[in-house]
Image (cartoon, rainbow, N blue to C red; front, side, top):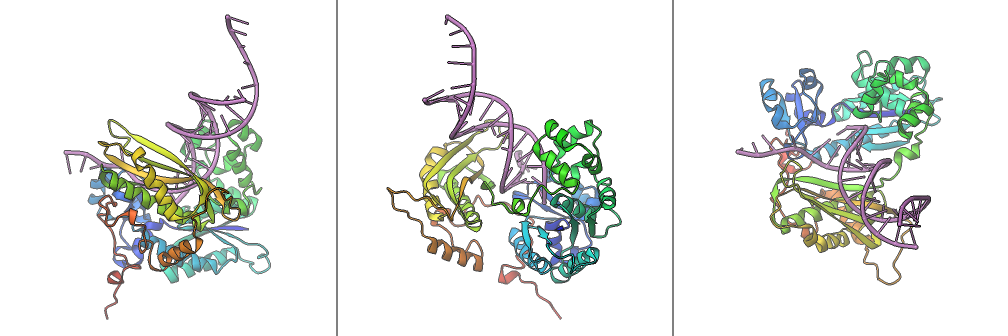
Length: 418
DNA sequence: TCTGGGGTCCTAGGACCC
DNA sequence: TCTGGGGTCCTAGGACCC
């Protein structure tokens, strides 16, 4: 049995944790640079606020309905995520944190211990709410895709109240026939439209297709989804937890950048983020892509990328920073108003099997990076930086509606007045 | 006045080589 | 004179997710 536990409009719910005065109000959270709407709380959803629309296009509508607007406060969301995941982990010995607000649980040999999955799901919900004030939905299913579907039902379909179980034919039919096919994990808008043409409109319609036929008409991914919807597991626990094949850090600037120094500081900062994530999943970077671009909405769209190959795969932030700084003059073109830039590790290797270079000494220093990560984990990721990342760079993102740093700054810690 | 997210994976097609 | 295969690497773009 699998379970998927995830939060209801996570970012918006996080904003409500330390500010009870907005709990009963419509709340939306904006993406980086306050560009688009990326989280809509249930109250705002009922007003008809769409997800992923550019903020400036919907500004007036939000003002008219007194919607509370917040910029993304990632430090807060990351801290609350850790708390939430720790609570959930107590309920299963096999947890995989899939994203900032989702975790899969695999229950092996639990059938003797748990006789009422429904009650168990509510136990998890109550504990998370009590300890973090975050609302979560819990979906149980015999395959990961069914657990996802059950989670959808738990949160979105009337009558489920936060917990759903899909483990037999009756519950499969009940849940899948009430789900649009695009609510199935792995079926997006494009595939949805093509499936609709074939009169496949609900999850149940899709489950009743021939998997083989779906493969020839669409892809191996759709074939797998059909099987999963029928209780035939295709995604193993190892598939879900597989290390990433690529790791990127990219961002648009708070204000346009047109000098090479600023561009370099931004790129080195992205390099540091990528390196940190790579160390977390115990990989090493063999090849790195470094890119910078103007906006695709500009008249003369400019986009330049360079691939750097390390002779010895590395996870060392200093080595990566040096490599980036060495190519900045091939990336930078005077006169371009840069809109975004980024760095991506596009070829990764396992750090257990490091291939050394016979002809050059390795400058990797695992102890240094271990110490560096230790300090940043303890005091926040900005505590220790490479000098080339710069200090207080003007390109940092716009966050006009930022909530206080309730969990990471002494001055912002909530006060209780008696 | 201007404003348009970020991450991951996959594939088609072009360039190049033998 | 004309036509032919298969591999690798790279890039751009599509698709999906949140």
